[in-house]
Image 1 (tube, rainbow, N blue to C red):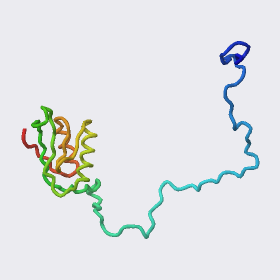
Image 2 (cartoon, rainbow, N blue to C red; image 1 turned 60 degrees about the vertical axis):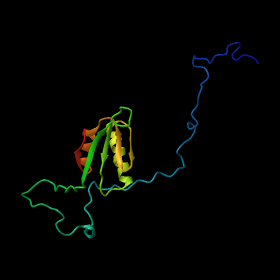
Image 3 (cartoon, rainbow, N blue to C red; image 1 turned 120 degrees about the vertical axis):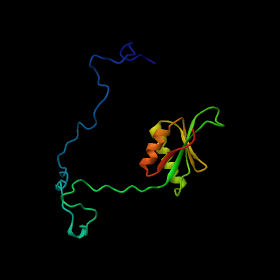
Image 4 (cartoon, helix red, strand yellow; image 1 turned 180 degrees about the vertical axis):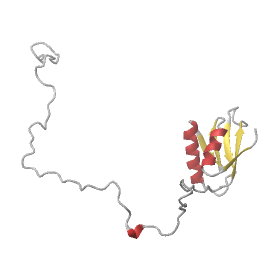
Length: 154
């Protein structure tokens, strides 16, 4: 096989032949229909009279001010334990004694706790197990979810 450029196997860098090309350079907009223009929408459109709510719906009188606060539902007591037994000396935070929630919600809570703590964990036998001593973070997340966390054990 013969060498390119009279004995040189290198690509010229002196601005000779262009390495790439633009396939759209030869196209023109001549003969094309203009693009459709979207209608301008107002920044605020009042709701339709048919959709307006009737009644109070938690509105406050003008003297009270502020927005109505949603009432927190108390979903029951949850025990937060720290265990090291049968784990090779490793500490595990356990959230146990949930009442009235299913496995799917426990999985969702466990995923949220794992993300907040930056550690591993699982749901096993109806209890949420989180690696390490993460009792404070677990209590904060469970309280935000409407549970009443109680520290139990050591």
